[in-house]
Length: 183
Image (cartoon, rainbow, N blue to C red; front, top):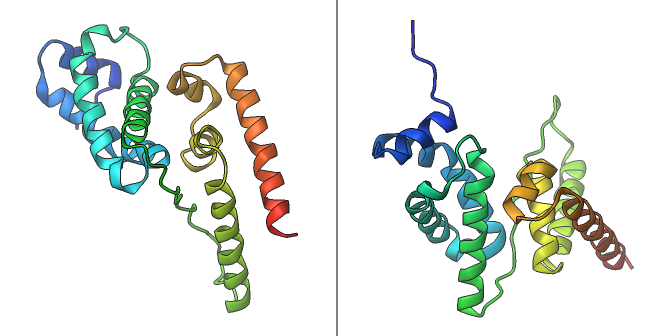
């Protein structure tokens, strides 16, 4: 009988008591997500460094982690803050190049349909890139990373109602941007 994977809470507790292997497991589990979150905020050039520094900061802050709290939103808050700090300190705002979610389908699309889909994605991503950073963040967290509103509230350190209103405003701005693109 194989052993079951350890839950985040167990791993965090072990790491708090000096088990480096437990923290390494958490890093492996959330590294890709952390890099994607940093990428959304800081761009390609800073994403991996921001994620790595966030993991170091999270490790040093484990004694302040609330036992029993979900680890993922706590970590993503640290990643988000680190990425924002890197953007602020560098004084450059790189264009955001979000990767679109892979298209899935049973049949291969026609070349014309594939070209239209590719063009629609390009237009969507360009419209998202033109949004203010705060709008890009909430859209990316929700639709590109699949975070729930509760997780977004944790990551952004705001009430759930604020997440809903920010997301609503961001989507309104995105729709306006998309319409302007087609005029």
